[in-house]
Structures are given as C-alpha cells and as structure tokens.
Image (cartoon, rainbow, N blue to C red; front, side):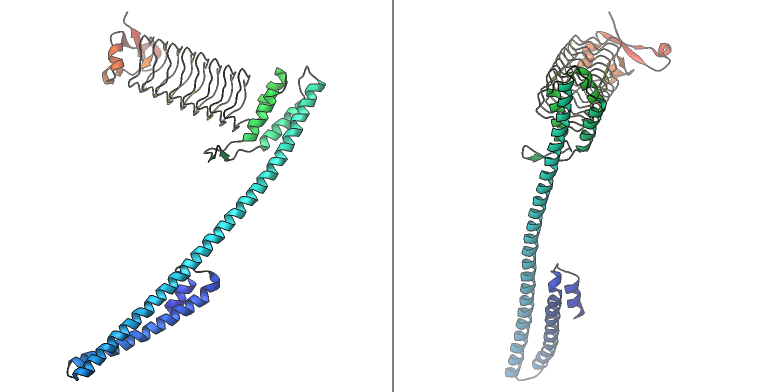
Length: 406
C-alpha cells in the first residue's frame, strides 16, 4: 500500500496535484486486490499439487480450473489498472498541452502589447528628437547645431538597445537595433551641415544598427561607430568610412565600389562576397575578418593587416597590396595577378591554388623553407623568379625575404 501512495505523491508518472489523493487511493486498492489474488493463487497452487499426489481425478480438474480462473482474474485486474493509469496520463498530457498553448498564446499577446507600447514611445521620442534637430537647422541654416541637441540625440540613441527580432520571416541570429538604423538614415537625409554631422558621428553610438539593404551612396560616415552593425546587401558606393569603428560589422554582399575605408577597424568583420573594386582601404586592421569571395580589383589596400583573415577565392587583381600583412591568412584560390605585394608578409599564409601571375613580390617576408615545404604549383613558378634572402644580420631578428633574381 505504501508503494501506491508513493506513486501518487511523487508524480510517477506526472499527475495533476488535484488528483494525487485519488491516484494513491486507486493504486492502494489495486495493490491490495493484487496481493489477495497472489495469496489465493499460492493456496490454489498447493491444492493442485495435492490433487496431483492422489486426489480424485474430478477434484483435480476442478482445482486446476479454479487456478486458471484466478490467474485470468489477476491478469484482468492488472490490465484494467494499467489501462486506467494510461487513460489518466493521456488526459493529463492533453490538459498540460492545452494549458501550455493557452499560456504561450497569452504570452505572445502580452509581448506584442508591450512591444507596441514600446515602439509607440520610441516613435514619439524619435519624432521629438528629429523635430528638435530640424528646428535648429531652420533657425540656423549655416549651423552648427548646439551641443545640447547633439547630447539629446546621443542619449536617445543609447536608449535604443539591440535585440533579436524577425526579419523576412526568420528570427535574426544576432541582436540588432532597427531603431538606431532608422535614426541614422533620418539624420543622413536631413540637411545637416558637415560640422553638425561630424559632431553627431563623434558623440552618437550607432553600433548594432540594422541597415540591411539600405542605400547610402556617397555618404560621409567618417569617424562613425558602427561596430556590430549589419549592412548586408547595402549599396555603399563611394561611401567615406575613414577612421571608422567597424569591428565585427556585417557587410555580406555589400557594394563598396570606389569607397574609402582608410585607417578603419574592421577586425572580425563578416564581409563575404563584398565588392570593393577601385576602393581605398589603406592602413586598415582587418585581423580575423571574413573577406572570402570578395572583389578588390584595382583597389588600394596598402599597409593593411589581414592576419588570420579569410580571403578564400577573392579577386585582388591589379591591386596595390604593398606592405600588407597576410601572415596566417587563408588565400586559397585567391587571385593576386598583376598586383603589387612588395614589402608585405606571407608567413604561414595558405596559398593553395593561389594565382601569382605577374605579381610583384619583392621584399615580401616569408619563412626560410618557404620554397622547400611548399608543394603548390604557384611556388614552383616563383622559384624561377625569386630567391630567399636572409636579412637577420641587418634587421637584428630572424627574417627572410623574397628577392628578384633579375
């Protein structure tokens, strides 16, 4: 009987608390009946053995018939008990599932209500902030806007925290702030003088801004903070991003032709399939950035750092790559034909199937056994034109460079 009560009160299986007593009661009753039946079977079993040892044949058959009846009755009771327990579990499962659906539905409604209220408040605040900026522009067309107004914009932008939300019927992987993106787009379209816009860019935080599929051609975003923002598939032709903070930014598929990103921080950026033809990206830190399948034809990337970056299958033809650091960079299947890589670094770079046709490699730092360990076809071709020079004595540290044999 104790086992029955334990089953009821320990939720094995799970039973609604309001039904604990009756489950325990039924379990105790079934176990009591089962125990009585087992005792009766044991007595009947003894009788059968006596009948086998000498009782009349008719009596033996009667005892055996009673024995079978007891077993069948016991089996029926156990089966009925299991069926009843299964019915209770099924009913409880349906009830829990229904309650869970109602709870989820109610939770979604509450979230939508809270989101609607929050968005309405943000829209009102954004409208007030932009109206304040617009009124200052009208009152003082020559600019610049006051520091108080800039501070108001900065405070409002700070309140627009990033979050995950549905975009094109799918939940975004990264937290973003579409409101910051809207604020930046609105400020870009306003007739702000350069001094006022520079003040805003230096004071206002636009990190995590959602600017996917936006059109920002020829815009001056120099010095702006767009860390962890998303500009996937954006048209940024001719944009000025000099001295900007773009760490961990996403620009997958963005168009940056003729853009300038000099002295920019794009560490750990996601810029696969980016187009940067005829662009300038000098002295930029692209450590750990994903630039695979990018187009950098006729681009000037002089002095930039691409350590541990991914430039797989990228086109860097006729590009200026002087003093670029490609140490431990993945250049698999990249095309560096007719580019100038002089005075750069290729230590431990992956150059499997990389094209070096007519590439200038004079003064490029490599390992001492670069030609020996390398099995790539590109290296076999370069052996005829370049040799490795030990400059340890001149530099004071162990360094080896490629030198043109001619």
